[in-house]
Image 1: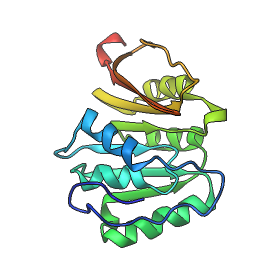
Image 2: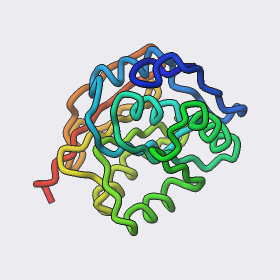
Image 3: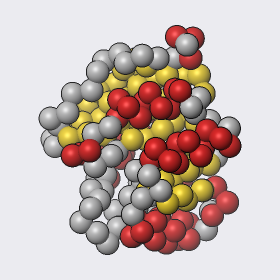
Image 4: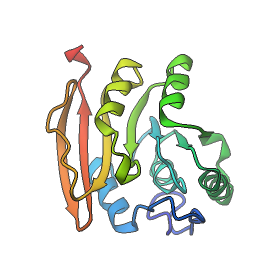
Length: 187
């Protein structure tokens, strides 16, 4: 597992030492960023089920100004912090240990808003549609924000949930990526 591209490209990352996470492969990560970027000029990125932090670190490497990396597992938080130390960019990240529901409420209280959100919950706990609703109700998205959802290939996400429209879908064997664009004017 490595940073694929950008200012930290090629740096090897530490995986989570746990069987409770499923890392996003470099192939899926590269494809994901070629669909939404591939490079950025500023903006805030949220990874709500961050695992090793690889996707959020990749986003900052490709030009996002800041990333908030959230996970509820101690081993994941440990790996995220090790990986951020490797790139010497601690000021570009917030690392938060906690459940997605609690952290979303805390971010809303602070008034944070995101340009890109990455959702890759444990496959057996698919809560993506409920999380999309919370992102809207907590006003955590800027207009036209992208929400990238990684699921297993058996999960069918809705084409147009309230306030969102699908802008891209791809299958990579066992993994599906669905990219939504948030439309504030529906509110």
